[in-house]
Length: 399
Image 1 (cartoon, rainbow, N blue to C red):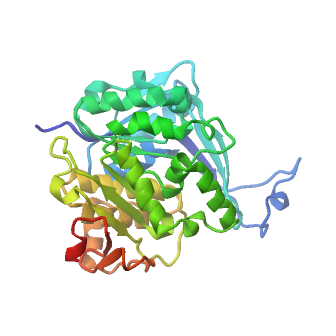
Image 2: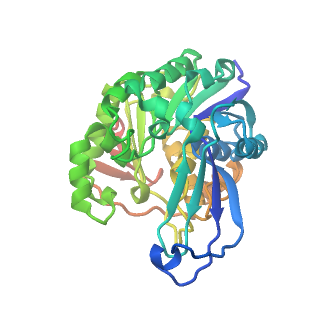
Image 3: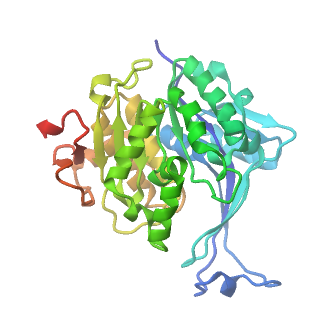
């Protein structure tokens, strides 16, 4: 049966305000910002942020019919958010609260200095199942939800509200997917019982899409902190072992997810699945998607403008490929490609190209993959798909 929408994208949304700060030569925050000092800046970029915007608009640019679902305040920032989204998809699923203020973020990003974010969670903290429009979800092939770790009602009470949200989505027959964010260890979210939350939620999640750091933090926090301490100022991802990916993926499937895709920054995307049950014939070829273990390295890029929203963009490429009936091997390469596109621009959206242009980029085979080192006893390189096949993949022996 044809659906009105390809996907409903729900969850966290905010208004991003990003002043352009000239390069003064300062390389430390105290050199630039001092009490009583007036800092002259350039124009400000104003855009929507968060997964509803970043993933949702990217999906719309890739040609999907998108319905947005989020909670904003009945205020000026909320009006701007709604106007910006109206040009990209269906906004009737956006609920307005008279008691909440719209979430916003001020990004302070001086050249040569790591970014500082001033963030007000606002209405996101009160998003719950009553903000869902079940009719819209029932008219969607897929339902994607993002960033419960920065939405207070989604992680309090051991995730009871998040569980309710996914039960409602699952009941409509939509294929469900879930993205995460890395909690601040010292915040209420960081102290939430994430393993218990996932035990409640993952039975209703078909595609689980956290980063490797996020899932490590949530399932094996003590070991994660040990690795983080070992890494020091270096990238934690470089200290996570290959076997950790497989172990954590199996734990997610044991908790109820049908498939997982762990985002791993410069190491690409790790995919693991069990036996897949389709929803509305999505994904198209369930046999191809079932019992797989794949690792898709990222495409090589000369210069990164910004990594803002790169994970959201990769998810958009992946879900767009799912919606269009692609096999898992192709879906992972679409995810890599949209993540690659994102890295060329400062914001999260403007780098994303159309579906046809993205497909052409992949067909031309001008993009090359980074060479990531994997245990060749456990992994085999497939030149046709530009992917590593793991020993847990049902086609491993055929590679």
